[in-house]
Length: 187
Image (cartoon, rainbow, N blue to C red; front, side, top):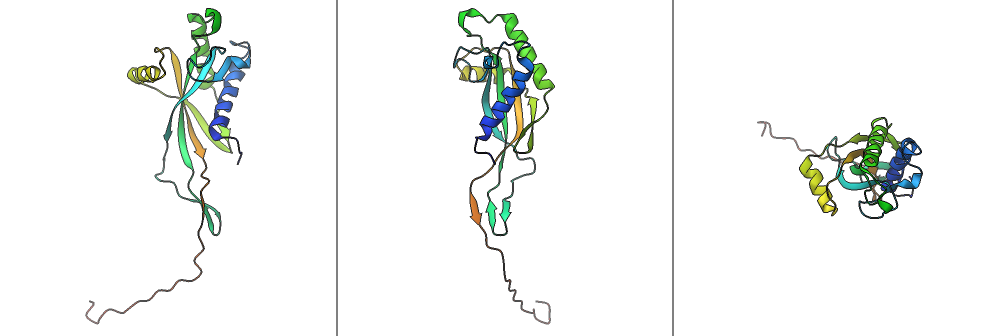
């Protein structure tokens, strides 16, 4: 297991895939795409922002992971990460036009549409579009202190977060069972 945080690795993999499709086709350099929140900086043209995380339990509560005969690790968490992809309207010198914004979003959507699953620690993580209702989009942008703007919404899942809590469970070496015979009348 890598020491680099899982969210950082998954974010960097997503950026790498987007850069492969968008640089140099519609962007000049890799630094034009960043993991950041709207309004955080002004030196990028296209932003990717993690806006929500939710637990995924496809088969109910997960079970402990057996490490050895007498050692168990708490269950891993499976998460769905929700990202927002947007054009940065605050690029210096008013260099983002409405047409630029449309071209960037279309390019990003094409990249996501053809994207193979990302691989993190040998696990495939699917990248899919996430449909939000208009009121959900408005609430999200308002929470970021920004006006609603065209954007693409993604979900990456399942993202496995391993537990670091390990417990020792000694194996059963002996088992005793004592029984009593019920009376002759079946009681």
